[in-house]
Image 1 (tube, rainbow over the protein chains, first blue to last red):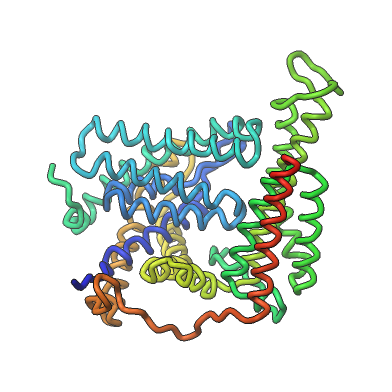
Image 2: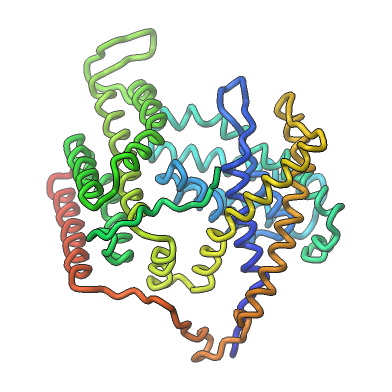
Amino acid sequence: MSREVDIGRMALIALMGALIFVLTVVVRIPIPATNGYVHLGDAAITFTAYAFGPWVALFAGGMGTAMADMLGYPQWAVFSLLIHGAQGLAIGWLVQKRLNTVTVLLSVIIGAAIVVAGYFAAGTFLVGVGAATLEVLPNTLQGLSGGLVGVPLYLAVRRAYPPLEARSRRTA
Amino acid sequence: MSVALDFYVHRESWLHRLDPRVKLWGVLVGCVAAFLLPSLSVQGVLLLGLHLLLLGNGIPWRVLRGLWRQMAVLIVLIMALQPFFTPSGDPLVAVGPLRLTVGGLSQAGLLATRALVTAFFIGALLFTTDQRSLVQAFVRLGLPYTWGLTFSLTLRFLPAIQQLFMTVREAQAARGWVAEGNLFRRFREYLPVLVAVIIGTLRMSDRLTLALAARGMAAPASGEGDRPPQRTVWRDLHMRRTDWMTWIGITLALLAVSFWRLVFGG
């Protein structure tokens, strides 16, 4: 039996991975209250999951953020690969069949919860429970930014670029 | 600022010539050793050894200093917080429920040096291995070549997508766009920029699909059974004698560390 290589999906994963990397590294919106910043990587992952489903989001999200970590925090790369991959997979899986208020809300909350819990567990292992606890609040904000920007972004792109909906296998 | 993800420092050294698969094995064993040997002196020796190895193989000091600078915030954070979470032994200073102890301090020191050792092991791989060899090493270790190619394409398109993002942001700024105000306002104001960037990315993806199809990437596999045919490569990886010797050395080190851990229990 012969098997074709799905080059469309390959190109999509490569470019969405690159986009997630760029939005993680280049866009930094400062939060004066915590002296930190929020990046738009999670928003790009949420968009990818909504537009192209769980598998593209799993690979693009994991790869894009792991590569972004290589720029300054290489020891986190493997954990980011798993955490953001799982985030993309979960969000994509939740909204792949139906898009309504319940699935959207669930996807935003579960997506953020995976990021917060995942980084807390990885942080406890890598840098100790002290530094990991300090990261919980910024990570919550970062995780929620995924849904707060990603969902409106998906709706806006869908309106502006109808071919997007043709790629989606969603029925309702 | 370009975000091209390239840490490679071109030199003609032993470490640069070493087969990337052996280097990957070395990084894995090194990180495992850093976790299995919880002793400040062992971590210190590993860290010093890594510095000597990198400097001896032509990696300039400024590159190592860059990695130190990136790790600095994390190290300070660990040293400032961790002692209070794991107090043990006599307290040095006690303020309310917070106790700073010798045990807590050494525990924090251990975590900090371990983070540094892991970062320098990964750095040693990335500074001395170019991207193509690294991807090829993963493919030779069993990663499907389509995955390897996807990864290479992502690396190749990083500067293109960054350029696209910059162009759109500048074009919007020229029309009076500015992102200011509180966090939620800024989120909303980024939407027009992001929409244009994403549509640009999707169009780029369509063109890339055509380019890949034109090069025969979508051709049905005619290999044995369900397996895709073996692709030929321009420059293949070959294990030389020194590569095998180093591989044996690293494996022996792993056995020694495991033996030490089993006998002395860390």
